Every structure is written in C-alpha cells, then in structure tokens.
Image 1 (cartoon, rainbow, N blue to C red):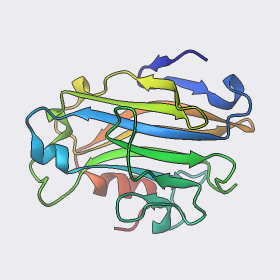
Image 2 (cartoon, rainbow, N blue to C red; image 1 turned 90 degrees about the horizontal axis):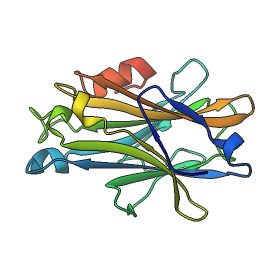
Image 3 (cartoon, one colour; image 1 turned 90 degrees about the vertical axis):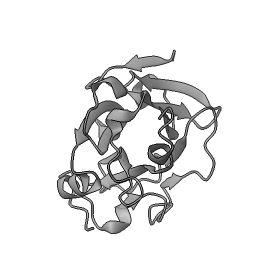
Image 4 (cartoon, rainbow, N blue to C red; image 1 turned 60 degrees about the vertical axis):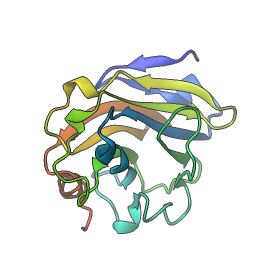
Length: 189
C-alpha cells in the first residue's frame, strides 16, 4: 500500500488494504519553532474507548504517567524513531473486544505550559507505521494551520469496522485542554 496523505475526516480500511496487519505505530511530529516551553510541554496520549465512545476507567488513558493499557495492547514507546516526536504502539490482536476505538490526542500540559496553545505550532502531523518493517502507511495533512486557541486536539482514531480496523484523521480541537477531552470521553481527572 503506498503512503496515503489523509485530510481531516478521511479514513482508510487498514486491515482490508493490508491483510495480515497485526499492529500499528501511531507517531506524531510537531514543529514548535522557538517556542521551547510549548515543545517541552506537549503530551501525546491514547484513549481507549468502548462502543459508546467512553473509557472504562482511568486505566484506559495511556500517557507519560501510565505507559500502557492494562493488557499491554496499547503502549507508549520510550523512544520515538523515524523523525516522530512521540509514538504509541497498538497490538491490534491484543485490544480487548470491548474496546471499539483507540483515540490519539495531543495536549498542552498544564502548569509550565500554561498560556501556550497548539495554534503556536508551525506544523503538526500524525502518521501510521507498520511495526513489522517500519513502513509508513499513512500521514495526515498538516493540522497546524487550522489551529488557533486550542490546547488539546484529537488527532485521529484507530477503530473497529466490519470485523477489521480503520483509521480516521480527525483534527478536532479543544480550548479547555485535557479537561475537554476528559469530559467528552468520560475520563476521571
């Protein structure tokens, strides 16, 4: 499958296009320019959701303080490769059947990152890799130009569809940061 560049809202049937695909690496790359405080306070995370779009518990939030889901199907990688700033690996076979989607989010960490927004980014892309051979499968369009005051963003989601897995680029922003994402996905803060 050649690398596809997807716009917001576009999706691709991963397991239909790549039979035998058993895992994914979700990577994110950003350019914060001279905004070093912003650069150092961006958090890439995954939210595991049921068919209602809600987490089962706070254990379904994978980020720097909780590096994996309870069953280890979704894990934050300690070291990103290939030019990504952060990466999360998904074992598609290990995702519990009650999990319908894995949502990739990026947010500005509260505290030192306060008063920073994602609108200050020069560029922002999310991509998917096949972990079997590190082949890039999909790359989003640059999501940064549409951002203004947002402090959190749903980048995209890997989701179940007709017995397989698909990926959709979303690009929806939140002015309330991680609190806005937590409210939408039922995450306790």
